[in-house]
Length: 143
Image 1 (cartoon, rainbow, N blue to C red):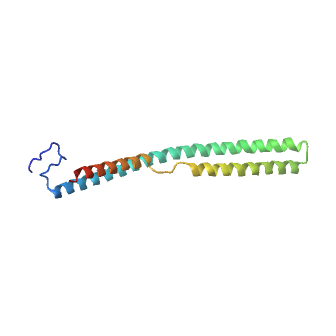
Image 2: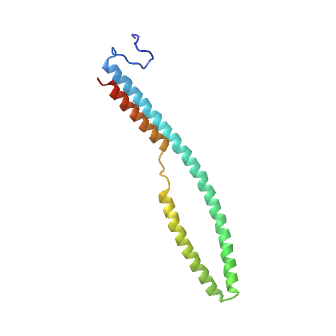
Image 3: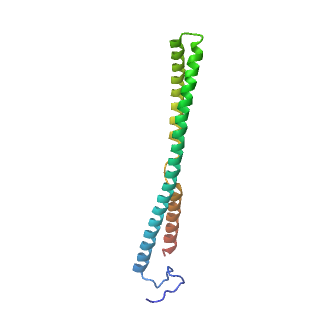
């Protein structure tokens, strides 16, 4: 193969045939896309692992919270039952808990809708930078 003027193995000169330049560009773009997909896969795997651990901890916390909440409700019903009929005490506690659950559910729904999208943001930014670099190189290359 003839030596190329212009330096490194990927350098192009004015003597380089267009077909070879197109072939190099195709190979580089293919490699770039593969690398970006690999990076996206790695980023999503890491996010998935963090989310899994967090979900497990939240699940355990929720179970313990349910036990504590149940005990607190029983204590409240027993305390109110000392000053009023048991059925009325249980009804009052049930209504208060239902209202609190509705408020918490609405706030939780708002928080979930505001949560970040599950997109690989670093990869997206890298792809945008790559596209800008390719556009810039193509613009500089045109006569």
